[in-house]
Image (cartoon, rainbow, N blue to C red; front, side):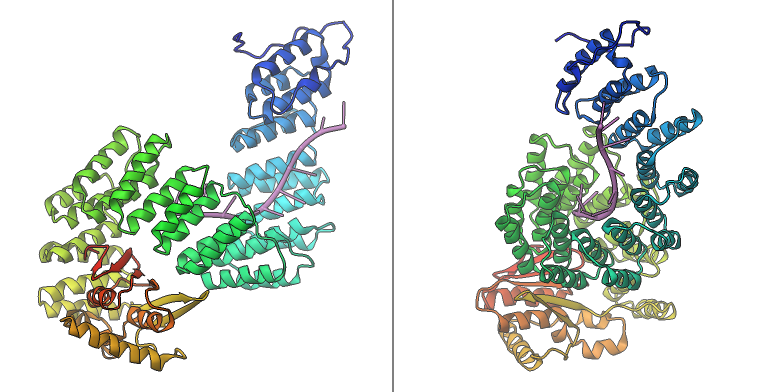
Length: 625
DNA sequence: CTAGGGTTAG
């Protein structure tokens, strides 16, 4: 291979008349750079380069092809005496493709300085650059320029403008453009929908959605993604169903959104349905859809499904590996998580900061202090990733759980940033397990200062006081909480049956089958008492709200209700999967262990922190959560 | 003669 390191330069203008030849037809998007340069050289020899059309096509290749090279395109731009808009547009487009919106805007400025009249193509690229850079001020100037050029009614430009105003929060400007459009198409409607979605205006979003003369798959995707974003996952799934009722085809984007709603709901049956849909329709599991599927199974506590989806995903990105590793970690499969990290390294996928937080998390849940310390060092030494506060949090959790409090405190003292609520929470959790009351009080107090609105902070600190029989401390925390108007949300658990998600709150009596459920609860209670169970009333005393205490007698904790409902509604041996909004209390935890044995059922509870897989009398978290 | 818009992940 001959080594041409520079783009050939244009020769001084020749007198020979340019002969249109066939060089250009050899130039395809797939052409290699080396061949392109040969064609370039031939074009210079034959003076074909002086033909603006030919020069443009070559510049386009250099800008757009994956085998291209933008600096050569720029050489062409600079060698043409009077570059016309197409050539500028090509360069701007190429820089956008290369993720360099700054350079794109510089070119636009340069074009302006040289008084080259931009056309409507120029503005679509430039507006995209403004949106990507979130530069609404610059965007406004561009808007003025567009009006001056008389191009503001062009539908492509208008749509881009609406999009720009949407992401910069100027809903009124966007709506004005929408209302004054003379030519408006489905993209205009969808851009306006996106505007309301981005700015959290649910009512306007729905109104516009209903007014649409025609909806396409993007319209539906926008509204589903909105529901996911505002964490109304049931709402998202309802729109997902409506979309199908309307006979719309589901795109990859639809499926990704739906999967993320399913994951948050823990609605495994619906997730499996989506997986089947993907298979049946031969939809390719690309790295995004694959990651979403892996994540869904993991969040539903279904490790096997997660691994299967991971294996089915041919092209795995860092995110796919991260979804797998964090899923294994959350489900208590610490060793498997570490094993996947090694596989990832062998597959030559470079781990990122998220990979390390997942693998460190696996180490802390598995009590693997040595491995955790090794990974923590490896992160900077081998991969040059600077640990952020999340990684320090994992390490403090790791040391704390292992009872190595001096190590944990040393880390807090030496880390380069101020400890945040997560750090103190980790330390406090460890103090609770190891009954380190003195340090626990310190951590709890720091925690309340840093997260005064989080009910969990108060509960954790009062737990520590109660452990020390320090009832005046408990009352003091309770009083502060009450004065600040902080309420502990009621415990709430859900279970999915035949695609329907059933929700139970503490002491729930609203379910249509409440009699059967409470009868089942009594039976469960008798069974576990036969196995020598004693209620752990300690936790009842710790309940903050006084009136709560009476009705939330331990038997009626939401997870027990959900499990009772699961028992009476499914056939024997069916795995029971429950999602809970708060952490599982220790009474429920020991009851679930006994139930899993006496009823010979696997019970999987996802609490606000992690998963508990109960089987044959023990839990995957090794009573460590 | 050539080109352009909106939705997706841990």
